[in-house]
Length: 121
Image (cartoon, rainbow, N blue to C red; front, side, top):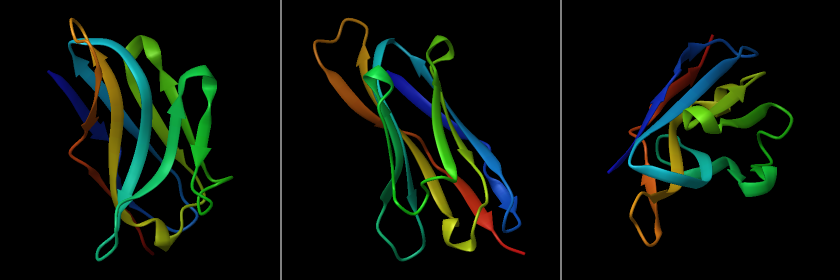
């Protein structure tokens, strides 16, 4: 009913930048909140950044000042601008959204398939 597709991952050197995109499609009435999570090998999935209504944003301490989450509501797309990347940022990054679908009485949480980010020299 609702699909999330991430793009923009890849290999980058330490200190470099990447911008991830997550495009939502399907029977979308309203996107209540969005977030980016990441999972490194052998570690649990963790919240990187989130954005809810009213412009409220939240960031993990490890990425504050380096990462920025933003939304283009007209395109149903969320971005994660990642600057000054560190090897510790290497992980699979997942997009998450809580979406109220058309003709639905409640919102549901959806996940993208993930995109690999590797920071290495």
